[in-house]
Image (tube, rainbow, N blue to C red):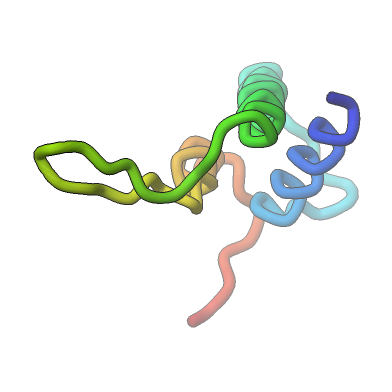
Length: 85
């Protein structure tokens, strides 16, 4: 699980791209901790659940493989820099 926490922390660091001297409010820090724990739990769970196609008699559907977007949305207000496309 510690490895998954490290991965989640790295993803968050890349997403929010804060300056080294940036300070966060207590609320922002709590958001980061919550997102990190939930993302790490999701990554850990992925090791035990298969992603891909779910088939049934009604048809088939794909499970999302990029689940990061929901976390990126939550971190948008903490983000330090926005790149230009």
